[in-house]
Length: 299
Ligand code: HSE
Image 1: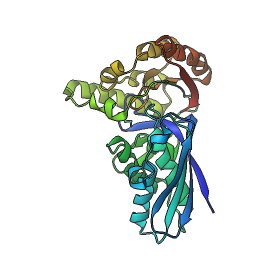
Image 2: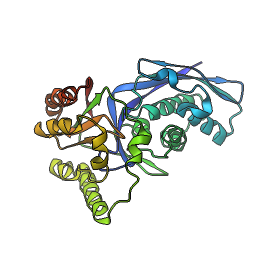
Image 3: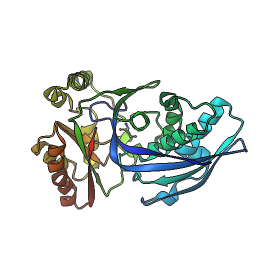
Image 4: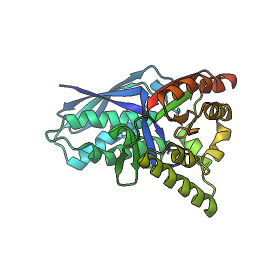
């Protein structure tokens, strides 16, 4: 029989942990349906969904993030069978919500359930990175890790680790009707960084992680400041400054770009605060001339 699995959207980087931190979002999701086939191959039968550009996604397995991940799984385990895959995309492409990562995670989770001896979630991480690299050209796990494990994660080259966080933490994620390709938002980071800036970012990251561990909102607030990536990417996102200002006006612990953008996130110390801030943050994009959707989610 066929197995279906979903993967949620995610906020990559969480501002202060470029290519390292991420958290899952209770909002849009991608669904993969996978069957075993006798042929030792991976075949994509269909890709549909209600997002722009879905018809441009490659059906050729080796060029598709989900197909590539299943090929990597099949080859690594030397499986005597293959997989047929259908994808339903719900996460907009070029949104900064991990739209490319989600399909490969959903496909891996579904395919794993079809194995005679399914692997633990963490063991799927490397295959998810094999899929992610096909879309972004870079092997970073900040989106796939929270999609696999849920919650807030640290994603290194070899490990995906879940961090327990206080239950009062909530995020607002606002997705404007703009597209920003990951490759373009990474290109603006090519110039070298100064060591003092790296030291400052490292200090923020340390405060942020200790704040999470201690459940200390003020430590999280001190840490949730990106001095490296946001200054270079913000000019690519019309409305960013207004959305962030609205978040901070409503008491956000911090606000920055979700993944490669253009979506923007903010963290709050309660669901009520997040719910009050969400419409104001959305207005920031509307005032800049873009339709936008806001999601409120536990982190
Ligand atoms: N960490 C990545 C970036 C996320 O910011 O470019 C997008 O894939």
